[in-house]
Amino acid sequence: MSATISLEECRALAFEAFSNVGVCRPQAEETADHITRAEADGCKSHGLFRLPGFIASVRSGSADPQAEPDIVDAAPGLVAIDGRRCFAPLSVARGRVLLAAKARSQGIACMTIRNSLNFSALWPDIEPLAEQGFVAFTFINSQSFVAPAGGTKALFGTNPMAFACPRGDGKAPMAFDQASAATARGELQIAARDGHEAPPGSGLGPDGQPTIDPSEILKGVQLPFGGYKGSAIALMVDLMTGGLSGGFFGYESRAAYNDDGGPANTCQSFIAIDPLRLAGPGFRAHVEALFERLLADGDARLPGDRRLANRARTAEEGITVEDRLYATVRELAGRG
Ligand code: NDP
Image (cartoon, rainbow, N blue to C red; front, side):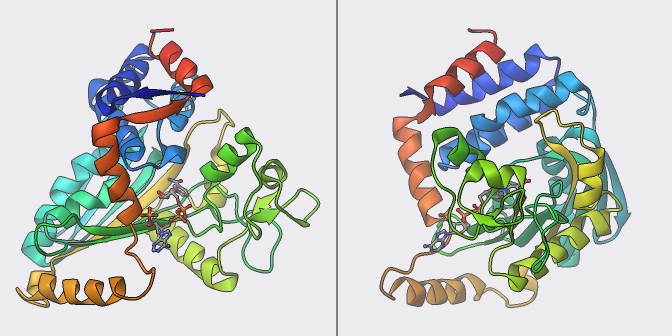
């Protein structure tokens, strides 16, 4: 059973839950908005489902609910942020303004964030950059849950990356957003909660043997997608995040984690490129020609199209929230 609520209601509930535990207004607004954008696009594993974890990290002291990120203009094309243990959406929103200004003036810019509490979806972080005309990448590590190809011990986080590209004719940017683990951890948690099987290849149980029982994988280890190819991407993501920012690699993040069920202390990086400075004004039309060919082939679709369809639908119909989660969220918001 589930309740249906509007996106405004979702945002308000999340904001009230944060405010109730003393999260400052800027962190509460940005994080509630991030959660709501995930719900709007049908990404249940990174929507309200994450709210109790965020609240737990405030209660345990791992998040600093009053923190303001320290944003350093590190070089003409570089922004370096110390999140000071605030929730990541605030660092991203604040830093993105400087990142975009640098990418506009230099043609390319890079931003790193360390000491940041994050377990959110990634496309909301770069879609605004593509809406401003930039081709954008973001990478984020998480505490270690994933074994390298050939291994059985957790070394990498589920280490997702996302890429966004502006489109022609006023269309929303194309954005893909994918974990380098075979299955996002949030999906495994939801499968375990709902009694579903995990997709084959998702992970190993505590005995080191492959299993499709999500509860066993959560106790054991996840696997990268595509064997050594996904493992190489997970490695790159750790280097681009923990490495470039000077913060934690996935295993260091795991060692620092207090098991409160909330986001771990992790790192993120961004690259924004102005395509007008390279390809010139024909860039968007050229991109559309490629997409047209892709879409003309059988059932092929663009990454992100499912999300955008969900966005159009939820703007009209609202979102559904599983009953137990809805009761928890209302209680956190002081409406229980
Ligand atoms: P999925 O495997 O569900 O999707 C990955 C991408 O592939 C999406 O962009 C999706 O677009 C696209 N896609 C799916 N099916 C097709 C298809 N048939 N044709 C073309 N494109 C397709 O995502 P994951 O499970 O890997 O990740 C889920 C979320 O979890 C992400 O938002 C990720 O950022 C987040 N995450 C966050 C972590 C953190 O610590 N912050 C850690 C790990 C994951 P569409 O959405 O339109 O289907």
